[in-house]
Amino acid sequence: MNARDARVWPQTASVDDAGVMSIGGVDVRDLADRFGTPVFVLDEADFRARARLFRDSFDSAFAEIGGAVDVYYAGKAFLCSAVARWVAEEGLRLDTCTGGELAVARKAGVPGPKLGLHGNNKSDVEIARAIEMGVGRIVLDSLAEVSRVAEAAADAGRRVPVMVRVTTGVHAGGHEYIATAHEDQKFGLSIADGGAMRAIEAVLARPELELLGIHTHIGSQIQDAAAFEASARKLLALRAKVAATTGHLMPEVDLGGGFGIAYTSADEAIDVPTVARALADVVDSVCGELGTPVPRISIEPGRAIAGPSTVTLYRVGVVKPVTVGDGEVRMRTYISVDGGMSDNLRPALYGAVYTARLANRVSTKVKVRSRIVGKHCESGDILVSDIELPADIAPGDLLAIPATGAYGRSMASNYNAVPRPAVVAVRDGRPRVIVRRETEQDLLLLDVDDEAPDAP
Image 1: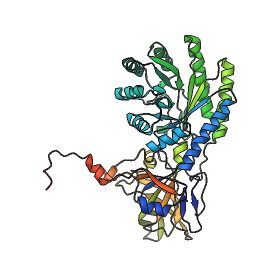
Image 2: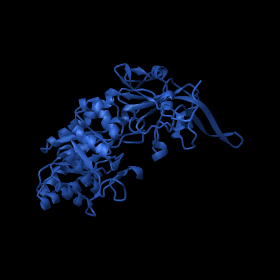
Image 3: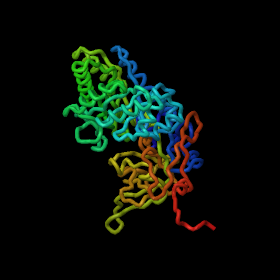
Image 4: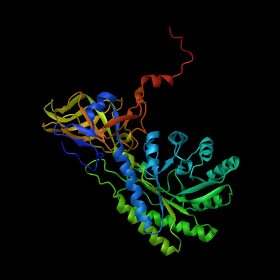
């Protein structure tokens, strides 16, 4: 119980002989006391190192074939102005999909050309804002968006760079809800039914639009390169077909992302340098077969940067053994913590599996079958469904759940009127709040009752 799996925990996480965990050189007991719980603890050094790993691995692999790569950080995984600034400082670009994410990028000072805008249902306001900010690309997700973006570009007096999102029929990853390149879903235009080609031809017919290239995304939590390679072949073949039929050779291809991480010791994170080399080899080989030059490539690591960088700290409340046979046989112990599905929706939404450890002390007690649950009024409010934890876990103890940096805070809600947790970045022994904890007063500021009597 006192070991730390380096595949699962942030790079600076450590556990001392007393069983106390530190992250970024900061004792988790001090973090909990100072900032409250639940709290997202983000290891800044870990985050930056993962960003550099993607940048350097893909730059190196594609330089060998005479190509270049842009790495787009997925704002949807977790975004605040500090993180947006880190992304830019580490040489990455930023992918956004809403006006709110564009607003965060603007606040952080990310240059427009380093931004992309995604989304299957962009509003006119979001499109106009992206054009006004001079984003490097708008990814078109439907045929109807071609004319909408072109008209907005004309109104702004600008020529707007765009990509067309296509579905290749190749999909990978875990839950059905995160596989995004099969035909029967809301994203993109199908290569198979000709929708992708019709959209591309529509873009070429609009002088207000500059066709940069094509884009796909095949899923999430992908553990090997095979699906990326198959998808790349289809994209490059479509690029060659467009060049042959229209005379326009698109300069860029986005291979998407969805790189897998380790949530538990049973998982293997994808090996970034290996995948980079494999994709470079495929692009080089296929372009050679097709007689087309290597395009500029972009990739989107998704959760693989933010996910492993963050640990959520919870404080234990009620500990409830559940027994059968007149109390003679313990079925499991339910350990209730002060957060739950409002700060990590993924177990309830996807059946996502996490691990946890006692973080504030050592225990030599026998391990018992346990379930970590939240405080919400749902039986499905489960953070870790089945785990062995020390039998002496008690109210006031701290539990740490790793790999919660992607989609934890981003999907957080105010269910049961619970304020959302803070995000605290740690580095070199110094903690600082980068997203403050919500308060009940924050919630009440949105509550409007125009028929309420005046307060005394």
